Length: 201
Image (cartoon, rainbow, N blue to C red; front, side, top):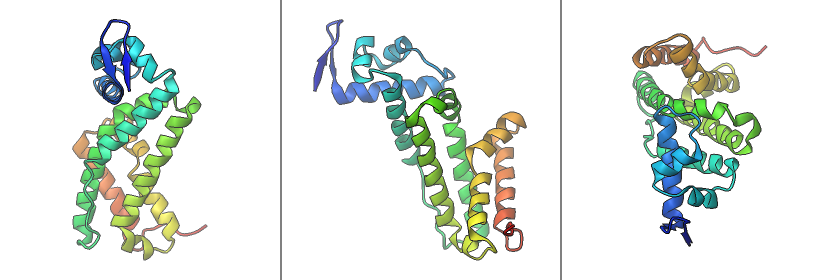
């Protein structure tokens, strides 16, 4: 589809759509948690009219940015071999999860401004949580299945390696990325070590 902008430039649909999404993500990652339509359009190299033709309201932009960001981040994921020794799996998983959590932090914090009233952002959060839980279960399936309470152990592992815990370590406690990564690794080790898993109430 071809859309003519008011400034005479021609914006090609898919390319313009992608440019707007990428520009929004880039602005947020650069420290602008609520970029205006003017700044997004300028960064994308399109007119504001083109922006509003592609995204007539904030919710449609939220949905597209959430989808685009998920694709960008998960493209870099590398599966950790569940057959490796536990200490090796623990280290590789924790390091990759820490990189992911640090990368998504700017957009996650920005999303908190709008999430309560945005079904798209709520759905994105559920999708992230599901993928993160599936990754934990895939990498540490043997430890989780051997726990006294597999369901509670998986929930504890997910909470320990989730974004809320990471934000607490990085912002509230002021830890560096290496320090926060070390805390997550230690906490996950305690959760998954036989005998340390939570017991049913």
